[in-house]
Length: 189
Image: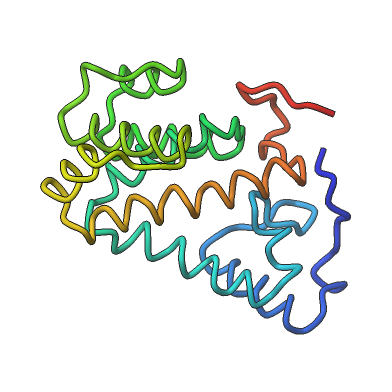
């Protein structure tokens, strides 16, 4: 059950309604008119919603590292932040985009996926270094730039930064899964 006070579409102010309608172009509303995921909290700040949706779309559609590695960075972030909605949504998308179930399982178990291809290992290591130590050691930085270029490294950082913001939003507002089921991470009340 979300902590967010539910508003029907008719209760939104004009700018909030504009963002609500924009999001409906790519996402079907739930039976109660809410959008689900991070979108209901985001539309409370229409300017933020506008920019956040555009940022997310840029990561999904135009990241230089490709969707497979973007999804890996997302699930590493979802696991780190114990974000149920983010994990459930993106573990499936990671699988659909070429991340093996064995790698997904290792990420869930907070275990380095040593069996993963080199590019996936590198993305995992970058994500974990930044999440855990808030730094990127020089050797890892050099590997990232050599493998992905500086633009690719920016895309990785942008992905984990964006999905950290999304995970915190989902967790702070206690946004649940669409079907009401429990996610893999316990919720603190």
